[in-house]
Length: 215
Image (cartoon, rainbow, N blue to C red; front, side, top):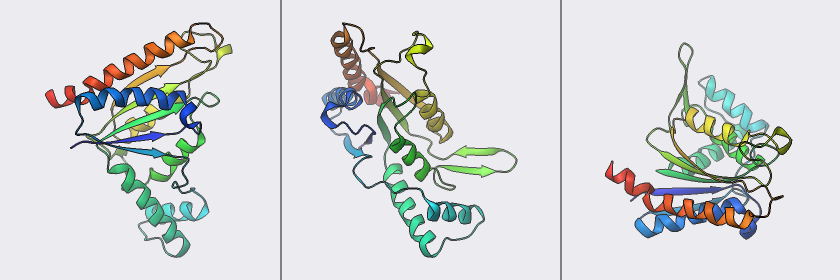
């Protein structure tokens, strides 16, 4: 069985465009791979720890080859639990709305919590970083209300996909597929574009893991 972890970073619930796009993908996936186990992780549900002073002390202790103790040790235990939940997945589905040209801060918080030595990466003074999450793949559902490829910079810039995909690649996840719904809400055909984006997402879901199995 393949485990898919759906990580949603929108606080808008049923009104979220990015979650709806991800759900369209999951609808197609369920049609052809009903055996797949999908876990939904709403990053706004209060389970994600903050990466504060104790966490920073713990990280630097680990870098120095020491075991964190006291409050730092408790913080590191929370990091380990969060990473274990993240790393248990075989594949990822991220639903990511654009916030101020980037990603929601809650998603950056997840990145900061799990990006730890010996978990997401290894480091060598001569060779630099090596991502440790190899053998996994990811689908990312991106949405934005105004920004879109080919529009002038007065409609915004994209530090959303560039940030997340750079981090995924750095972590060792290089098989990344993107879905987009960027309608520009000033135009009249947003509903048509939404339907087309959901159609593409559902079709990708139908073939996604089937193609992986065939390969």
